[in-house]
Amino acid sequence: MPYSNGFDRLWLPFTYDSDMRDYPPRIVERGSGLYVYDNTGRRIMDAVGSWWVSSFGHCHPRIVAAVREQAGRLDHVLMAGFVSEPTMRLTAHLADLLPAELTRIFYSDDGSTAVEAALKIALQYHALRGSKRSAFVGLGSGYHGDTLGAMSVSSIPAYHTLFHERFRKHHAVDSPYCYRCPAGKEAATCEAECMDSLAKLFDECGETMAGCIFEPLLQGAAGMRVYPPKVLRRIFALCESYGVLTIADEVATGFGRTGRMFACDHIGQVPDIMCLAKGLTGGFAPMGITAVKERIYGEFRGIPGSGRILYHGHSFTGNPIAAAAACATMELLKEHRIPESLEKVTAHFRAGLEGFRDHEAVGDIRSIGLIGAIELVKDRKTKEPFPPALRVGFSVAQAALANGLLVRPLGDVVYFFPAFVITESEIDEMFGILHRSIEEVFHVTPHI
Ligand SMILES: Cc1ncc(COP(=O)(O)O)c(C=O)c1O
Image (cartoon, rainbow, N blue to C red):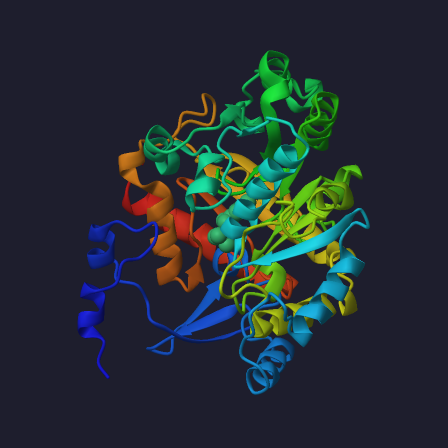
């Protein structure tokens, strides 16, 4: 069936209508490992794991087999009064992988709903304790998803300002954006001063705070801003002093991405609530998790009429096919000893990134685990950004695509979030294509 008029009907996320016309989306027919193939047979290397979900590459045979087998056995069963077998298996896997203190696992549909559930759990937890704590604080430029609750605790101006004005705004403190440190510090002298803003807020109104939500060590959508463990340590310490629940949004950082199983492991801290999604199913199906400490679940232990019940759930909660994909993914994580086994490939990845350091338009290079980013700027000395109208990042992405590489910059930050199966030679190929694409853009647009 021809799809010519399909383009008149589609509404793509984060896409201008004019781009939809001028750069119509490629129709992708299949995927294998690091690559997807469009309907002209073109091979495209997926350098961003298709929005950070494809942890073991596209169509990993082990996950394909698990999904196939499950689809022939049970499609779905509601998750109240019933639970599917793969969901039980997955829960056992997670009990192995998660920090022991996170004793209860609540399933939902994706990263946004994992955050929604976390916010509701935090609010109701306090209410059940007779506390009126109801405010949330997040980090400046934080991103926690696109549903209204998740947006109300997020702070990327272009995405959220309108909705904050019309819906609900939370408190936002400084972003730990080391390249443009809000406290004017350098790495060598940093004492996590960016979090003075959190200390000040807690001094003023800490007793009203239900929870502090943060992306540990990496603010992803803000532009892959990697920040130091001491900042995360200070967030935990401040929350503890003021009795504020810690909500670690590990939707992007979880399951080995940062070089530890969870980013919070880098500082040996366990949050009160952890949100997970993305790599959980290896990129096969949407699924989210909100894991909580026993003391939180304890407030929800109730009998009918007590109000101690979480009125939250989605039709597809705990979907067996997604759970089967997640079980296979968890098995792969364990068998391949992720993240320990990634050390060598990660070192190669980091060295490759450094190869961009001398380019006149590269202002900053940052990485953590198998995530790396290059921030392009107009002036390296002053860190002046390019005028947004030039769409430098977008142009680089278009050039890269023409050269067979899928990147999806965040503004002028070009980043890499490849599947764990990437090899050293594929890393060289990936960076080689990006080098070439940057050169092409700067060559054909000399005023850049
Ligand atoms: C840290 C973080 N939290 C939540 C989300 C939302 O996840 P989803 O897109 O699966 O709803 C994202 C998505 O990028 C994210 O990076």
